[in-house]
Length: 358
Image (cartoon, rainbow, N blue to C red):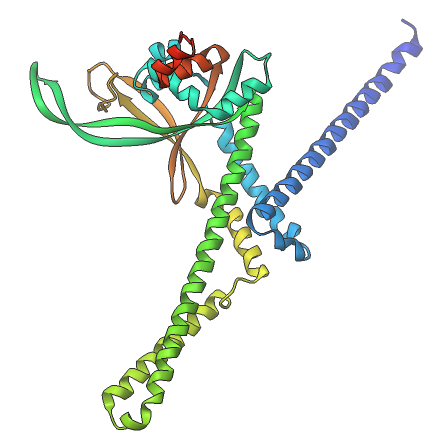
């Protein structure tokens, strides 16, 4: 090795570090641009889903930007906490405690999948796929029942028990890969927040309209009372009625003034939408829930020695609903054919059409 080559080593190292720094900066700029584009798209979805007229306000996107970005970050954290998908199949029902809890028997899966139109349509559009990933939501339902229990080596009847069931299962966002279904889950969550903001706007406007109707009624009453004032001028009870109506009108006016008037202005709507997205943790929570149930769906205490399955669930809770969220993987082979669906719905019709269920 000559001296020149030896002296080139520090220069090469410096050039490599500079090149690495440029690549990092380029990747960082690309990431920032991608996040900015995602935020801009999300803002437009929020405006379209709540009040499109907000676009008439200058700077609506700057006003909503930080709040929407906060919600997107909150959603991403929630979706990252979802466990890996569970297999939605009759074979999995035998071994997976979650599938065993979600469905009373393996035979309940084909009818459920036969009603899952989004999943059916997805497989039709993707004939080469052997499986699909999706979001399954359901409502956990607890009922007090009476059954048989073994206590202190004695069989006791009419023992109060808690039955755990999962009702109204629904499949959303079918996708080709787990990564894609998690992105779809983020989109679903964003639209859930949009729906919550829309509900709050409707509730606020409904309150205003209620106050406005009350004001009109009280004004009619006041005009009627004042029309009679000549005959009742000296009547203390009559004067008290007038004073009560005037007080009610004054309180009504103060309530309307606090809300900004009888109608929501665009500025008020923008502020309410911004506030909804600024505090996403107040609107939606994804909390882990641990349950211990036996094969019949009866809740067991944590310290019981009876055979039972341990379930780890994630429940999405809003002000008006509570749903269990599960990522699932469904093999195409589990989807019932048209013949099988008709066979289950009407065996006689299937026989007349020459169909045979599997």
